[in-house]
Amino acid sequence: MSYRSSRLLRRMLLAAPLVTIASVLLASPALAATGLNPLLPNAVSPNGHNLYQLYLMISIPALVVFLLVEALLLTIVIRDRRRRQGAGYRAPQWHGNTRLEIVWTIVPFLILVAIGYLSFNELQTDFVRPADAVTDLDITVQGHQFGWIYTYPEGFQVRSDGQNATPMVVPTGKLIRLRMAGTAAGADVIHGFWVPELMGKTDVVPGYDNYTWFKVPEPGQWRGECTELCGAGHSTMQILVKAVTPDEYDDWVAQEKAKAAATPSPSASPSASPSPSPSAAPSPSPSPSGSPRPSPSPSS
Ligand SMILES: [Cu+2]
Image (cartoon, rainbow, N blue to C red; front, top):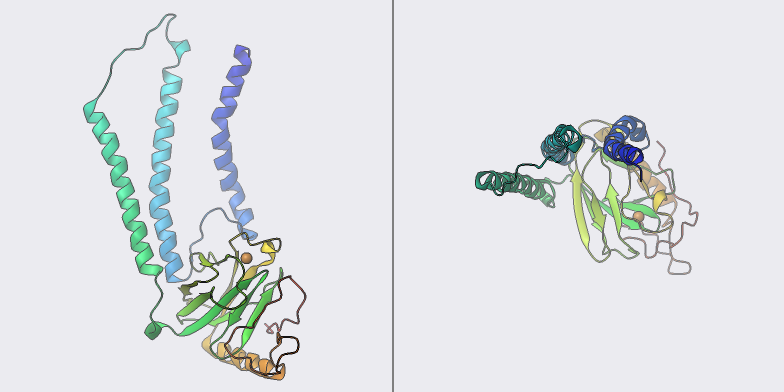
């Protein structure tokens, strides 16, 4: 390779990381509209908000370290490049600097200890199952290929399938606990429940129940998606959480209960006993494929 083309190549390699960072930052508002923001949003639920603060506490120092290291590297590469030194230049030959080596070992160690402490603290604070005494509403979440079933304590279910998610309706100002029911019948593969503007990601794991929670102060709607690649219909596992005032929530619950009573168990097994019990018990077998079922979507 000629000298000229190798110089061009080196310049392109140098520019590549800068171009990548710039394009991510420039594209992020556009991507945010599609739900694919590469940056973590500040969440409205306290646990999601704490997660966002942790993200800032780690990312900002990381960015400072990155810029410092890159700036030093570029300074040395440019200032001390061979072309600026005379022909036959030989750099000073020395070996070892005990004080410097101790400093650059201890400083990263302390940074990692701080990151570990903050992260474990956040895990202990916001990723534990909230006690029954403080929980206002318990919703059971089942994931299946490909859709979600939300079972409410009032004894009805909301099914969300396909690209247009049916909302999980919740009251504002209440602590909502979600049980990711991997032990329920019909659990197939791992799915991930994540609404980034509410809380952290929680997996729905077959054979195991996971818990997460959220609490929103204001009415609103927040989008999420299944975050474990669970099969061909993975992209259709959209999530929509809709918070309404407690009064509106009570009205909605009454409507859903009336609807459930009018259509006894929409997913009853083919010829089993016609028990019209839309009880809290999960339906025995959600159909494996994304077959069109008469999903009782709540009027919004
Ligand atoms: Cu999934």
